[in-house]
Amino acid sequence: MPETITLLPDHVIGFPPLEHALKQPDGLLAIGGNLEVGTLIMAYQQGIFPWFNEGDPILWWSPSPRMVLKPGELYLSRSLRKLLRKGLYRVTFDYDFAAVITACSSIRRDSEGTWITDEMIDAYTALHDAGHAHSVEVWQEDRLVGGLYGVAQGRIFFAESMFSRESNTSKIAMAALSEQLLVWQFELIDCQVYSDHLDSLGAKLISRSRFVDYLDRYCSQAPSCSDWKQEWQWNDLRS
Image 1 (cartoon, rainbow, N blue to C red):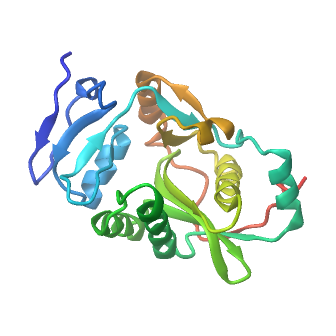
Image 2 (image 1 turned 30 degrees about the horizontal axis):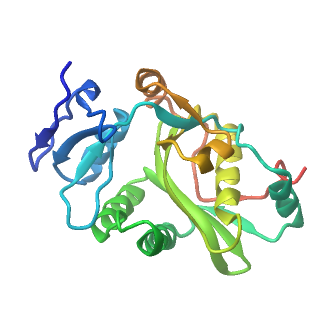
Image 3 (image 1 turned 60 degrees about the horizontal axis):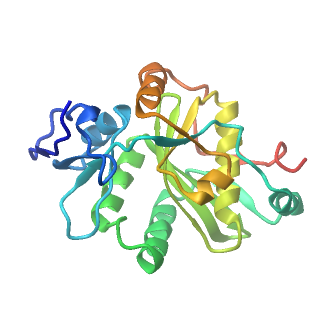
């Protein structure tokens, strides 16, 4: 099937086949459309996500291979385990989504560009309000020092971005997420694309077709959780 970039209308009724995605840049599939809740849900269920810089049109991606992590298989280094045993931090879920995505945006603006734009913040906040986007917060007393956010569909969690204001606090957020998703019987954490950092945490590359197989099987299966907004006490991670 030829590689082509589809120009989406403002009212998106569907995405092109993933096989149309470009190899360079890896995974670019479509341009345009909108960031409404229904469009984002449709995209994630098909293995597609938006990523674009401020001032650019909306760009939709489905890279191959795909970087993924199995819940409960996050690699915890000796130093991270030691940090967790100290009990310096408290972890919550969905306590302050707005603060987490704003912090992720600020970190990216300072170091990696501005892809978490105001438009993206508004879109994912609406997705959170609809019960699909979730956050993990890491607190040092009453100060937010790390966290991450992403999208849950069925038993798949699509991780989007993380931040640290103290050493290793984004890893603490990922460790909490990984262990809690294991308890909730999630099957996969999507990490999107390869990085040395993700590789060091135990994430692996799989083919796009295998990733889509996971989506087809597990996006429609309900997890064993009813409320994300709860504290995680680290009982399993301090050992």
